[in-house]
Length: 202
Image (cartoon, rainbow, N blue to C red; front, side):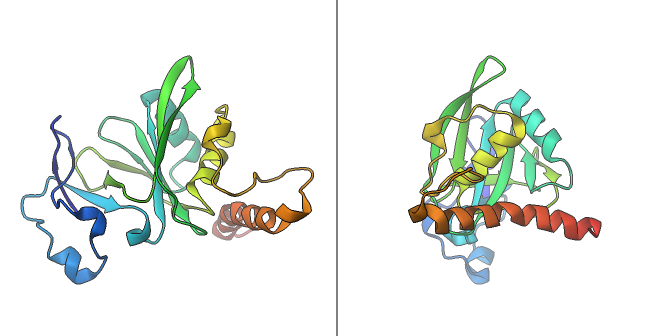
C-alpha cells in the first residue's frame, strides 16, 4: 500500500485510513492512491498470508543481526533510521503484534514482533535497503522465529517474549502431551537448513 510522510518527515504513514481492512486483490491494490506516494508499505498478517517482521530498534544490534544473517539469509532490510526488519513467514498461525525490551551491550533495546494489524515500510522506499535476499524465515509463529534469532545472535531471551503457544525446540525431554507440537516446531526450524543444502548442492 502507498505511504506518505509521518510527523517526523519519514515515509512511514499509510495514506489509506482504513488500511487494516483492505482486501488483498490486484484490483484493490491498483486502485489505491499511488500518485505522489512517498513510499511502499506491506500489510502484515492475514492479507499477506502470515507475513510478519521482527523490528529491532537499535543500530548496533541491527548491524549485528544483519551481519550474521548475511546477503543469502532470510529476507532482511536496513531501515531509514539504520535499524532492521527481519521478515518471517508464519506457517501455523497469524500472531498478534507485541512489543517488549531486551538488554543488549548495556542498552535497553525496543523489539517489536509486528504481525496482525500492523504494516512496515519496505524497499524501494527511499532509505530502506534490502540486505538479506532469501525468502522470509519460515516459522510456526513469529515468537518462535524471535527465539531462533536470539539464539543465533546471543541475546538473553526474556521468557515473557518467547511464548506463542508452541513449545521450545530441541529439549532433551518432551512431555507426551506436547510431542506433536514439538515435532512440528522442530520440523519447521529445520526447513531453512534444508533450503541451504539445496542451494549449495549438499
